[in-house]
Length: 123
Image 1 (tube, rainbow, N blue to C red):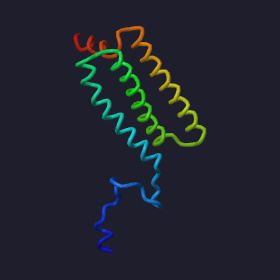
Image 2 (cartoon, helix red, strand yellow; image 1 turned 45 degrees about the horizontal axis):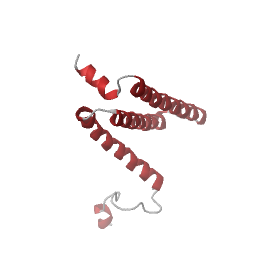
Image 3 (cartoon, rainbow, N blue to C red; image 1 turned 30 degrees about the horizontal axis):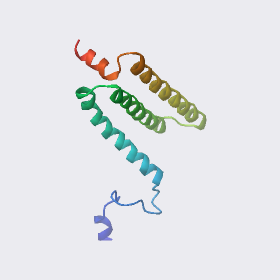
Image 4 (tube, rainbow, N blue to C red; image 1 turned 180 degrees about the vertical axis):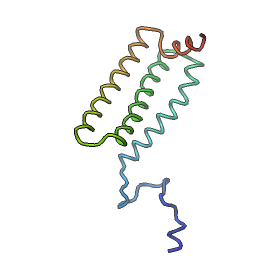
């Protein structure tokens, strides 16, 4: 009993154990979320130091995915009922697709994300 009280509640360094409600898909999703967050941290200085189309499109993809996952968690936490959840998820996918398409259009037809932010900072 004493050993059980001293043991950590969750072993985050090993594979998920059977019988504890762990899911490999959830673990991979969590890992993907952390990877995108770290990627965004690296893209911010890259956008300042070497702006260009590769960074612009990488930012468009990473920002859209980061926002999609964040709003998905809001839906999970606050939307209840099968119909409402389906409608909210459909709206989220439409919003994410429009956001990514809009950012790609902006990158292709206008100055791009990096240059636009630099122009805002110069005001």
